[in-house]
Image (cartoon, rainbow, N blue to C red; front, top):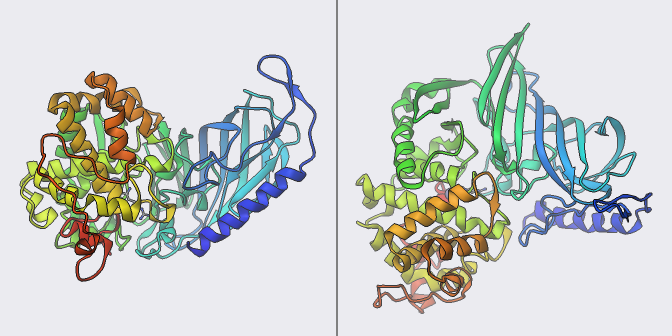
Length: 524
Ligand code: ARG
Ligand code: ZN
């Protein structure tokens, strides 16, 4: 447990204590007309791995983020105001936002000053008047401040808001975006976003979605962006600094732009352009791209991972220096997340295999299609050969990291089993239902749950429905079992029970996947 997480847990205990001593407030009329007495919203959505992430009692519908970067210094703090439009799901005497940044100013609810107390990473807001069940309300948090850090690839919390020599950017997944702005920071509560970013003239500001304006204001410039399809807070991207926006020809009506440090545009222009044909490759397989724009944000540092920030995937320059992990399949991986993980978000973080299993599946399939699989995986010629290797290590991976859909802890959420065990479960499903039905399941998943959050159970149900086969027991064993089920059609595949032999000489759990790229920490 990191020190930050220990502090978060202690803080959460305090919030519970506050809840117990809170005075009761006057009753308001409930949805059915009966009197319901308002009570505090929960300090978390009830995520198994991150109990305090997100908040209960309301549904965020829209965030307007106004951000000001005072100077050109890449490492400067940002100051901002957030306006959240929400709807209550119960009568609320009080509710929480998540916030772990440097400071906050005044808080208003429906235009009136509200009491706001910071308790650990919770901002506990008591409005002047209780909020009735089902009522829309507007929360404004003024003058919050967040300070970027230097990324450390071995310290995941160091990258939520980070700076490089060119400027700053964000990588909040899974539980760090509220270090930057107050929000309901859980992918179960998605919302539309508008950004207004005020920077010194000559500085570039980009965010998720489409550019809606660039206004010169004396010595400063104001950039505005809109992300109209619902977005999970963890996928927010705000990059500010000496970047150039490189516009490319649209692909099937999708606008394409990359964001690259000015001094690196020439060096990376040709490589990043591969995303245009990758967009076509994905569309042929799973259907229309779910957003208005796509592109890559390049940062000159070593984050240790790439990230699917919505409509603008984040890549570090370290990725392009990896001798083994091919950057093209990694770019495809982040693109695949725009469907799997972004448009369709996890209902809770234990469902993250749905994101990573699919992204890994398409990454490997793409690498095979492009003749890059051998280089990318350190020797495997086919996707099936790769899957067989994962199968052999699968019992071991389950015992190390937990079942595919029940990772052991939030500290190891992006563990190799979630990626490769997730892809292996999809391979097993494909073996079971056939290639045609598998493709129909994939397409129906992204169509039916577009813009929403969905669970592992939803995936199992949809797979059964689309294939016409009862898959409940089959997929439950693959996703929740502590041992690896037999692979349909491959009776001689064996999951090695010999833990010790898989540990290899270095004794590392990752030896079970010898040779395979580990995207969650490609720089490690
Ligand atoms: N979702 C990212 C990917 O697979 C991985 C992010 C890992 N995050 C982290 N903080 N290490 O592409
Ligand atoms: Zn991924």
